[in-house]
Image 1 (cartoon, helix red, strand yellow):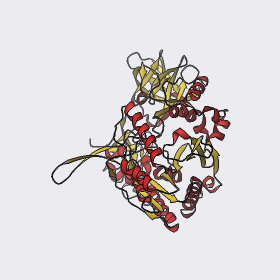
Image 2 (cartoon, chains in turn orange, cyan):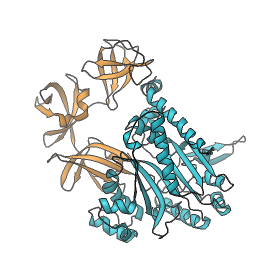
Image 3 (cartoon, helix red, strand yellow):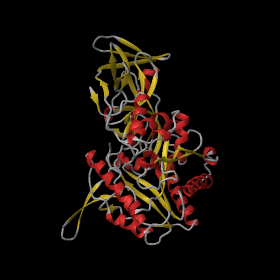
Image 4 (tube, chains in turn orange, green):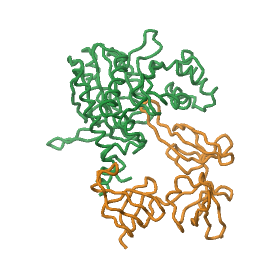
Length: 190
Length: 333
């Protein structure tokens, strides 16, 4: 499938020089001189080597369709993250490199999507917005963070992640987090 | 409350941003520059083939419609002012470019410093940029050691020799550049313009390696790549430079082309490229050509991406963090 540069995004798979590459990072640039381009950091699925490629709109980009498999996150043991396919009960032990940035958003029992290639999980993607319980929400102290301290403070979530949230958030409440930016979205009233 | 939270999250960075804006003005005012205003709504924006203006419609009191655009740069307005005798002027304000990413190193609405010096060349503007950055670094006590060092200045020919291993003099024509692209393993279309071919190599083999340690000025661009600038004495290159630091392009500067007919020829050619690319097409601004006919003297002008300059000092990778309200928050993308 020939793709356009706007399809070159984190998590997509591209066929390049006979090998398959997973895009781990992409950056769109419109330099204002010369046509726009996208710079992609891609990791070889077979060799693990990372390369950087620049694609222009006229380029033929071979985007490969991949299967997404629903997986449940079980726990972390040592350097590995355990996931289970709830339909087949098959488990996958994934290393840090595969879980990537998503690692900090994982919480026990959470559902994620595994990007599958020949029965292997090559990447993990999580929902764009996730709910977390706040386990620690100290009173705001003015001047202790980059923010003004009038509206935001740092709170700790059930999985240990620290995010900026409005000062009215209390311990025990549930909040919605944008897993792309790590930003607070809203409080969930139960 | 998402807007207020965004501002609050970046409270200190925004304070830094506004302090930098103040210092840019102070720096230029000390040097007897005049801050000018340029209309943001224009009828005929620049013809650069890869810059897209945002269309707007204005209605008068009788609801008669006028089609215009938000300016992509204040360049035409400022050159019209130079033609009347203004000598050292700057614009510090918003410019708009369509079809840009929301976030990263772009925001469709961004802040530009554009400045012109009469009786000057682009070498003077290299000094302006270096001195301005060092002034901010010192005044706001950032103590950024790389900015404080002496900046690197290299010609385009030198960096191509260093990183691509070729003599750029031999690749100033479309055919030879096309052959070089193919030899280096790229798969360009046969009909690609010189500039496209040039950037295929430059973006992959050169740009990632320049300005890593100290801010680096790359000067003398192949002449066909600078439609608003003057040529070097040998006629092969144009007096244009760009400033790079930490992998980001920060500024683009020219010794301005002051010949009206030559300018018109280049703009008409660019307009044809716009048509070919199926971009928005509009007439060449004859009032701008008239300004050159009246004479803008021997001047140099530059454009500095102010948001990106702020990102360097706040060490941010995303422009959104140094903007009060970026597009991504305005449209909640």
